[in-house]
Image 1 (cartoon, rainbow, N blue to C red):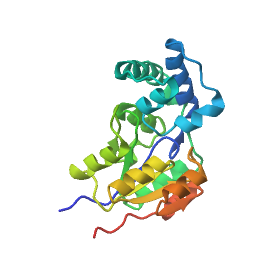
Image 2: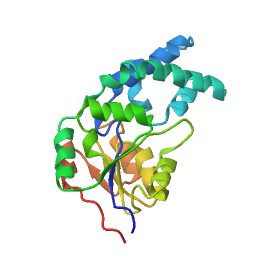
Image 3: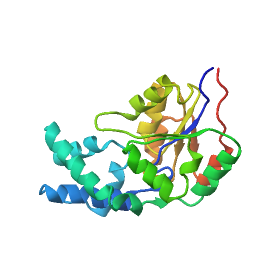
Image 4: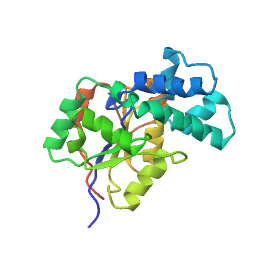
Length: 216
């Protein structure tokens, strides 16, 4: 029997706005190694991509070990207080509860470490609604995360990926999944339209209209 078709959500920029915690934690790491700090207006572009990619871009370092040290320093603060600086987008709790009440299987696939994702969902009282929670690791792209979920039979190949950045759309396409882009997060409308999701939503309340696809 094939796995169910899930509605798979990204976390940062899709369910919650993590800008404060991520920005402060990035600066915690940059400061520790003597790099210039990010301005608040610069943080948004670094929300979504994997941390190692972000620190390579910010520091221009080609040293894998140095990048790992930056990631570790980031996580030092993020795991302590940064995760709790998330803010849910208005309408998200209601939308998640509505979808779960319809009996639709819900999953989460995020570039952040799975224990952080679990803490954030628990903080907002949403953990019970997600039967699959998948987090990333250094060097593992979201396309590989989704591929692993499908290969392990945790989600079906007719699942839908929902996110605010082009990486969510491209990861879905790489795995032949349906994709939904959302415009309330950190990806611009131009970015998402260029990525060409199957559906584009402007407001969290529109999530309630989503339905899992029927397996082929």
